[in-house]
Length: 63
View 1 (cartoon, rainbow, N blue to C red):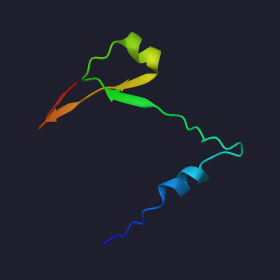
View 2: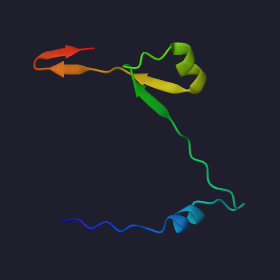
View 3: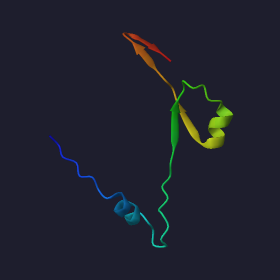
View 4: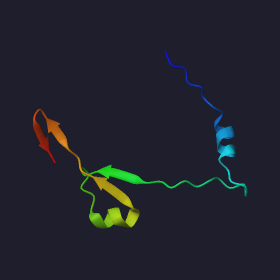
């Protein structure tokens, strides 16, 4: 059995602040699979990365 310690969320937030007292910004990426058929223009406009969805059925792979 592995034990995990839950930290105080407020303490974590305060520790992540930068020297000016603002919350530290971290880059965020959005990645979706190709199933929703998102138009390329929308993906580019919002910086969304599309990865192919592969279905595997026994020996067959369907893209």
